[in-house]
Image 1 (cartoon, rainbow, N blue to C red):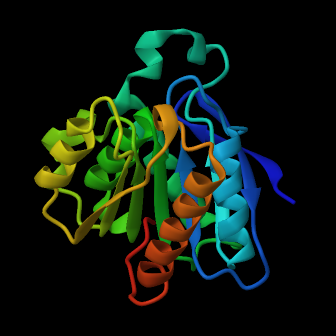
Image 2: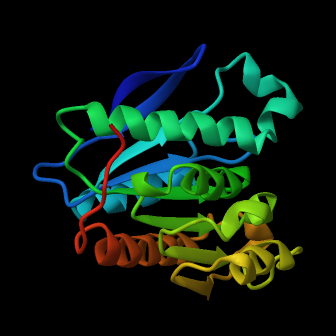
Length: 216
């Protein structure tokens, strides 16, 4: 079962749900989108499947509760990316997680957050999965991302160019896959299964095969 953790990032005190299986294969941090929290059922499903496959998972709220009611904060990708870098640094210091290679799983606005955090601290992250959302909010930094990135797009999405624009801008190893979902919510069983399978495939490939320099 996951347990609550609190991580200091600047003046913020962030809450997360950490799950560590025995002898984890790697570590995945989830960055959520607008209107969702670490309790988001879709990300919980994917996190459970990754944990079952042997990966540690950390579902993070990158905003304090009082901050989450301000839309400026919700869409402040740069500020949340700085906090995600602090979360990565915390994991790099923790005895239980510091030896593990790190991946980011971003959803909604969190896709841009994950990509920008990877651009700010490229040595900290070994792989990224970007699920729908607005990765284009980090397009001006995507070319700086060194980690292999899997972009997942709803093939019936209203604004597919958001994901495809970020995919085109990426210069690291990358892949674009389409997962059909009504209203790009990914709540249907087939969509949940596809998300979990793609995430496990990507993280298994890149969190186990190469060394990476972690943050001090």
